[in-house]
Length: 176
Image (cartoon, rainbow, N blue to C red; front, side, top):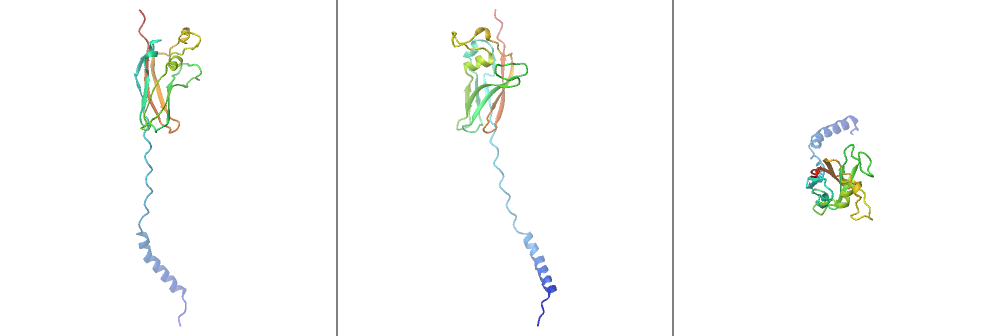
């Protein structure tokens, strides 16, 4: 009659474990999770023309057009001018930006938008409007922004995309 031996059972379990370890160690590795998709391309912005003369009322007839690519289809794009220190604008806190235009990107992620005449009057010329006057502009209130190169920012709150360009304003030639 055989007696049950813990020693013999322990030796058999250890031996089987030692034989199985190489097989367990050679098991196929789990596949790494797939890499996340690349982030969407950053949007771009450009302006035409890139230099504008600060002549009133002539500049009102000069189209300032912004265009961009690489935005998410259908997202809203806000275009603002960064005001440098010392340049004040009504209803804009010091160091703030002033809105120039707003557009929606098309299905290809592109947009085109022009700065409107009233935006030019209120922001670039910092003038007042009076709807009871012919032409609606209060001539004595015209105070153009200083000639300089200004940073233009395009951004979307939806995707977080942001892009910049510059727009240069030059003084008109002296009157003869």
